Image (tube, rainbow, N blue to C red; front, top):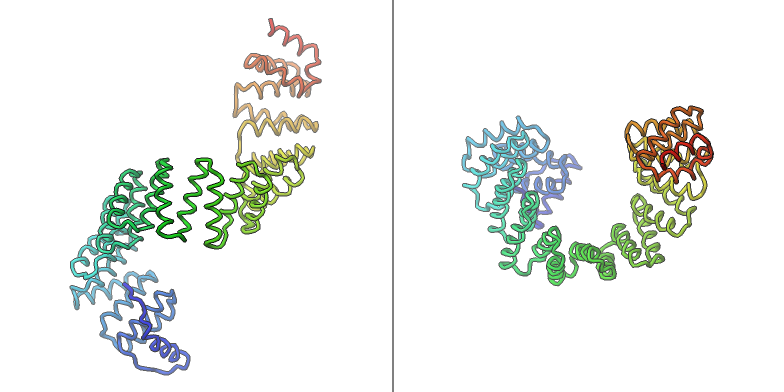
Length: 463
């Protein structure tokens, strides 16, 4: 368990790094080496930590703490057997050293022996002066086992030791969330707040629980308290904005989102939500402004490009809509929603062959809904690709039997392709499934409905 590097000992660190640069050998006492090693481990400079451990053990080969740090380094590098051997040797020398048990537990945890790790950490508790860190480790081991009740109890014990251990508070609430025990979480948080009414984190977490239960007024009250305690609490403002959106209080939502852009660097998410709020208020110009800010802030946020697409599409500016949907597709070409939109826009622009590309892409990416088959079939018919449309409808028939939309189209396509017997068969099926629907197909296949044979069949069904 690492300690903070003592600022008064930075001279030791400078001296050590000077030694490495000059290949000189300076003497450090064991505590100086410990501080140097902790500094490197805490800053993620593992290579330098290893050098300090090696030199430290060369000068102090019997130091328990340095050997423990060596074991910790080996565990980090997944050299578990070598670490275990060192820990077993140290255990014989100092059987009451809590850190030995902690590191043994780390080895067991890495081997997925979580219950054994818990047992070992419970032994460490007996010898620990400060139990909070060990209780947190036990809680994490129970999380690995999906034992949320025991995990929560241990994290709660951490809070009894250190009331401002917000990491443990988050973990307690996480355990409640994983068990969908939101009412229980609210009870726990209210008890916590009774003891510490100025905990903005607790108020924030309480608001989140009320939000899940759709108790929006209570959630807003909790978030309001959070920002009263800490006026710079960006997360609470975001949550307030989400609730205002749920309640269709879009002006209030915008205000909260704008506060987040003032407190921290603006995010594409905030701009996007502001744009959505303005769109809901039918303020299209302001929506457009913030959607453009969204994609400028994060050009890879495809939702921003889609929002621009829809806005221009609704304004019947199909050329610009096509430009923006191509931007979204360039980011996520497997998203069939984008390809649908692509086809719809191209149809508005009378670019029928391009529209078929979008529909085919939807099928390629397994968007096998009936409306995709119908849309593609109708476009193929319009451009005279009757055989392709026919083949597509045969495939649709296997997936969607007894659907009038498919039966009528197949009947008409059989007539067009010269198979009148099959044409009559499928036309009759369509009329039987949904008689009135034939009026739609008179517009799609006018040449077929001019045929005497077709009108004879229809007149018989009318009787």
